[in-house]
Length: 375
Ligand SMILES: CC(C)(COP(=O)(O)OP(=O)(O)OC[C@H]1O[C@@H](n2cnc3c(N)ncnc32)[C@H](O)[C@@H]1OP(=O)(O)O)[C@@H](O)C(=O)NCCC(=O)NCCS
Image 1 (cartoon, rainbow, N blue to C red):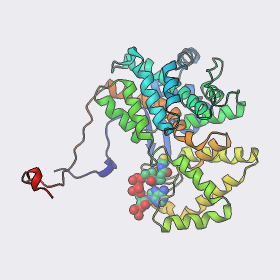
Image 2: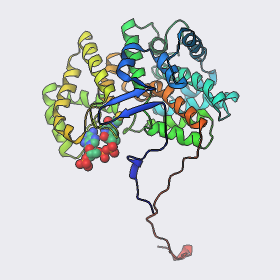
Image 3: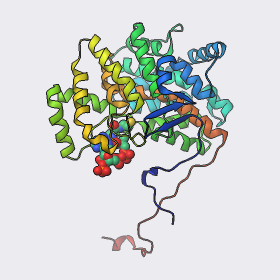
Image 4: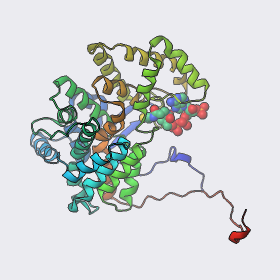
């Protein structure tokens, strides 16, 4: 029997041309471009095109792609009704169900091919943003806001969320956040999407599998947990004792550690600056100071490769923008959509069923016991 690779740690699943992560160096590259360059220069639309098509778009290609994204922004009325009916459910349950309904109602989405998956995937990038915004509105007792054609993906998302046009600065912050979340190689949710694609399931099913996997606190839920921690600590001077107690109790500190990064997560360092500046502008330096103190308390664990991850500063940024905690994981999904779609398409292009083994450790030779003789 081959050795057991618990959690598939260190196992190379396949080849990919979508993203490269050097965990030791803290480096992330989308299709050959360093994330720090993309953070400075690229919009979410450009990054989505890059991930889906493998190269940066020229002006005409970007215009055409943007048109396709904009054309996909509406969601059918029955999906709105589903969101309304699920008002009390966990937002990720609502997103998963609404996304499933969107593709279930689209009879042209069923073939598991690149030709069908690409346009459906592009539509879903837009529709997932609309679902999240509509869900937020409905949960606030408000009507969903229809998308606005002339706004960028990020600006339109904020517009649909809050019902008024965002400032250019807020839209730019969300655009950056979406770029930073857009892709991350074979993370758990993307792996789930590829497993579904490997069975030749339609792209909608693959995205639903990814959304379901993102829900867990060890993957998508950390930003929400970090923000709760910040609010619980409440005072920068209390941060060090709080963290020491957590560690003593054997608990993990949310927003720290990563399966691949054993150095600073480059996405976290991008968001650190945003959290500092935004907090300062909004008259709330305290959250950033608490986060800094938590980072300081965690410094001794750097030797073990435990650094802040992308979620560490994301929660503070979302909260400062007025996005409630419960929408943090859905926000992650809005950003990760192009990465999920790109991986499903890559899997379709050279498909193989993904089916690892489990080493059975239970008994093998029990004798059948009739029901009335069982304890
Ligand atoms: C992300 C995560 C699941 C990676 O897990 P992993 O690769 O399986 O690593 P492990 O959980 O085995 O951790 C390895 C060691 O580091 C420690 N560690 C990892 N993350 C830690 C954290 N956030 N706080 C404290 N210790 C941590 C573990 O306790 C373990 O220590 P040990 O070797 O003494 O047992 C894990 O770091 C974690 O739970 N982090 C908090 C949740 C989070 O922020 N998730 C978002 C990821 S983007």
